[in-house]
Length: 285
Image (cartoon, rainbow, N blue to C red):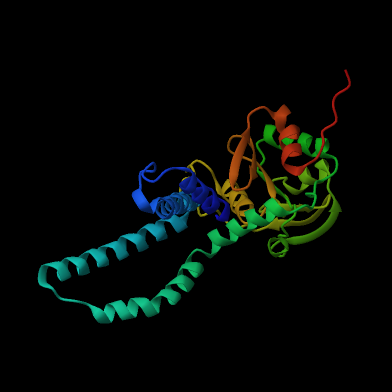
């Protein structure tokens, strides 16, 4: 801002009086206009990002309810004041003292959304390499085999954000990840086929894990519990989840709270490699 002020001052000295449209108060008014433009731009950007982040989540409904309630109260009190001249000094004092408590309440209400937003910031500034499983081609072959048989499956690959709390909800395992083992776990008569498999650093650490379901209200009703669980875990962490639908046999990859259907099974390896940071070897010509 000091550079802007200096430039405006030099401009005011260089131009004759009256050359600027503000008369004798050109520099001061110009600074006010520049400051107002920057402030309005920042506030507009902030509210746009906030509403875009809350879109389709339960927090947006809470925010709408709060805003509608507050707007109704303020409108009614203002109408009474202007129509009948009745002031409300006690409410003004209470509102002033309640402001810090209101901020705390908002933080509690929007705790999941704030956590996800801070997680996105930490991911953007992280220099660590994402964890990726070995034998990616073998895993993709197994996912395609499960899809052909329409056997439901949900596999979560942990990356930089730890999800040990979710691992503790399942059956602990410690086995090298392989396609044959994944198929065995999700065999319909296997006692471990319900829930999710969690993979960390190339090893299956747990099976039959319970994952949090997404709170998004924009999700299609045709998507089942596995897809909602895949969205839930990828909203709260940077994990990558692979879902095989037992109704349609379709394979879907979830990442950063979004579902990416893989229409062509041959593309699954490339999609997973992109999200997990694994290089797919080129086929020999």
